[in-house]
Amino acid sequence: MASPAATIGGRVTRNTASMLASRVVMALAGLISVPVVYQHLGPREFGAWIVLASLLSMAALLDLGLGSALVREVARAQSPADRDLVRRLLGLGLGWAVLLGLLTLGVLGACWPWLTGLLRLGELAGEAWHATLWMIVGLVASAVELPWRAVLEGGQRYGSLATIGAGTAVLGAALTILVVRLDGGITPLAASAAATGAIRTTLLAAAARRRRPELGPRWGRVGLDDVRRISGYGLRVQVSSGAAVVNVELDRLVLGGVFGTAVAGGFDLGARLLNLLRLPPGFALIVLFPAAVARTVAQGTGWLERFHLSATRYFALALAPATAALMVSAEPLVRLWMGHPIPWAAASIMTLAPAYAINLIAGATTVVARAEGRPGLETRYVLLSVILNLALTVPMLWLCGPLGVTLSTALAVTLSTGYFLFHFHAATGRPLAALVRVVWPPIAAATAAGLIAAMASRFLPDGPNRLDAALAVTTRTGLTMLITAALLVAGGHLGATDGLRLQRLLRARGTILSPAGGGRR
Image 1 (cartoon, rainbow, N blue to C red):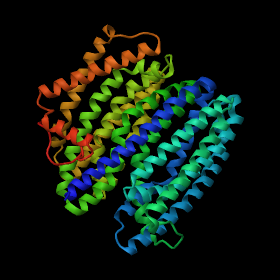
Image 2 (cartoon, rainbow, N blue to C red):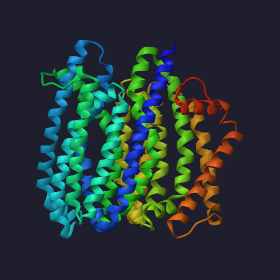
Image 3 (cartoon, one colour):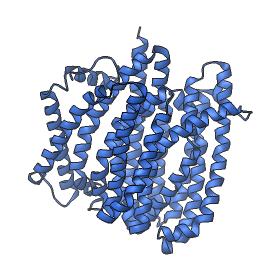
C-alpha cells in the first residue's frame, strides 16, 4: 500500500506535469500565432494591440487577489459548515467580477482622450477604443471564471484545468490566425479573444460542477469578519503576484508612450520568449501551494522546513543553466521564431532573464510564507520592487534609452527579491546561510558556463536563415548545459541521488520536489 507521502508526492508530480503540458500547449499556440499576427498587423498596430492588453492586465489587478484567497478557502474546507461558507464566498466572487467590469469601463471611458495621447495611438485611437470594449468583455469573462477555477485548484483537480486551458488556447490561436488572414485588425482580434474567454469560463464552470458539485457558488450573507479575512489575505497575495504584472506592463506602457508602439511590440516579443523559462517553476509553484498547505497541516512544520531547502535547490538546478542558455541564445532564438531580427527583443531577454530566474528561485520561500499564513512577508518586497522600478526608470531611460526601461525592471526585481529573502529568514528565525548553501553552486556553475559559451559562440554555427538560427540555438544551449553539468558533478553538487529522482519523476512515481533526501552538496 502506498504511503501518504508517496501518494501526495505522486499527485504533485502528476498535477505539475499536467499543468506544465497544458502551458506548453498554450505557449506553442502563442508561438505559432504571434508571428502571423505580427506579419499581418505590422510593428505599429501590433504594438498598439500589446499596449491595450497591458492596460487591461493592469485593470485585472482590481480583483484584489480574490482568486488566491478562494483557492486557500477551498483547500482548507473540511466540514459541511466550511463548505457552506466557501459556497457563499464563491458567490461573492461572481458578484465582484461584474463590478470589476463596470469599474474598468468607467475608468477607461473617462480617461480615454488622455490615454490616446499618452500612448501615441494617433489614427489608431478609434479602432483601439472598440478593441478595448471587447477586451473589457474578455476581462469580465476571466473574472467570472475565478470561483470555478478556485474550486478546481483548491481541490487539486489540475487535469481538468490543464485540458480546458490547452484546448481553449488552441481554439484562441486558430481564431486569431483566421481573423488576421481575413484582414481583420485589432478590434476583431479582441472580439475573438473575448469569445475564447467566455468559452473557457463555461467549460471551467461545467468541470467544477462535475468534480465538486457540493461547492457550487451561491448567493448568501457573508460575515464581515470572513470578508475581512479573505480580502486581507487576498490583497497581500495580490500585492505580491501583481508586482510582476505591474513591472512588465509598466515597461510596455512606458516604451509605447516614449518610443512608440513599435518599440513596445518588440519588447513584448522578447518577453514572450522569456516566459518559456518561467513555465515549469511557475506552474510547479501553483500546484505546490495547496499541496503544501495540506501536507503542513498533516505533518507539521518539520516537513515544511525540508521542503523549503529541497525545492529551492531543485529550482536553482533547473533555472540557473536554463537562464544562462537563454541569454547566450537570445539573438538566434528571436530569428528562429520570427524569421528575422526584431529590435529590442533579444536585448529584453538578456536583461530580464537573470532577474526573473532569481525571483523564481525564491518561489519556494513564497510558498512557505503563504502556507504558514504569512503572505504579508511578501508585501514589503513587492512594494519595494514597484517603487524601485518607478524610481529607476527615468534615470535609466535617460542613460540607456529603451534598454534602460528593462534594466530598471531587472535591477528592481533583483534587489527586492534579495530583500525579501533576508527579511523572511530574519522574521521567521531561519538561517539564511542554509539557503545560500543550496543555491550558490548551480548559480556559479551556470554563470561560468554562460560566459564560456558566449565567448565560444563566434566559433559555433550560425547564419541568416531559420535553419542556421536553429543550429546556433542548439549548439549554444547544449554547450551551456554540458559545461554547467560538468562543473556541478566535478564539485560534488550533483550526484547519483538526483539522477534517481529524475528517473522516478519520468516514471510518474515520485516527485522531484520531495523533501526527503538530496544529492551531495
